[in-house]
Image (cartoon, rainbow, N blue to C red; front, side, top):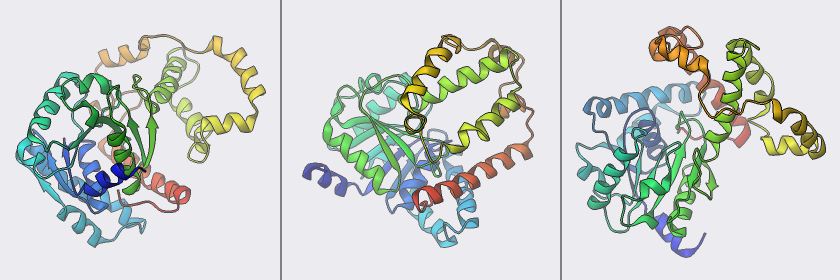
Length: 325
């Protein structure tokens, strides 16, 4: 890390998070658990006021697995200030991260205001999972101080953060935020080009396209498609990625399978008919109680608890310890 980047990293003492909902409260937990003071703001007062309770609930699985102590919860929450306005949020922050709805115009409006209210040397980033970093940056004057930081849900559990360079992102801001993510215990990856979906979502949605297509064509049920991922190739993914798997299998074999298989894979650029049909029926997923599966509140709570518990156990083995956020 260059000297300028190191000094900028050391200068970051208070972090602002815009958005306290699904992702924002967990991201606030990440930084507060790592010892940073955090300003948290949400335009919806009810969402903001619920944030600390959600963070406290997040800690339960960490405590149950011996990865955190009850006093860690109090310490974390004590570092988080709930702010009544964007102006209050920006006060004293050297780095401000946005985690609001995936709406380009809304993000641009928020960042234009945040830039106006912030210190001249503040760094800004968006947690967008797919919107162009360069397009969001168009709302800013200091575009060299803006980049993408895509956390994965749940952000207080999953370690990966995609650090995304926009067309005008400066090297110092980019490497400073990359180093910050390492400092708080995350596993950052550099996304060097601002492509739609970045890395993870391109990979994930390529698989989803094939999975939904197979279900739509009656090749297998949704349950059996999930099983082949969970108990087949997906089971090894925490330990070995697709490029490593290709090397282990041998690139000649990998190439030969590609030659035969690729022409048969789903290549549509439109959502599958089964998705449109389910949505038209009101079966939109867990919030509606039905999607590909039937859902109850008990089943939702159980699967989320199991997800977080298993993920933390696996990650604890892989990286030799998981921070409480």
